[in-house]
Image (cartoon, rainbow, N blue to C red):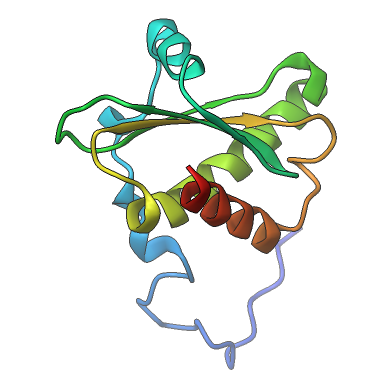
Length: 136
């Protein structure tokens, strides 16, 4: 069975414009993502800001290097599908908000919360991150 054709009068038909939000896709580079356990442990010793959608841990490294960010969700968040969805949402709000509101030389760790991170309104989560960054 052949999939249906997209209508010819659609707004994106023949357009080379990226979809909304994809123009800033490279705002967080792979070397800015925390992957080592030691980095997560160092960030856990710093201040933390609890929001309704997630927990933000902040660690100032004291250098002028670009900011770094890490994401984690424990099994309390849910099964693998729920954890992956929560982490995708955390990555997206970090990609959208940290380049503008984050500080250089700082590590940020976003921790997903049980049953909330995957279901909370996306704009509210963005507002939560902006508020948490201003409270630090």
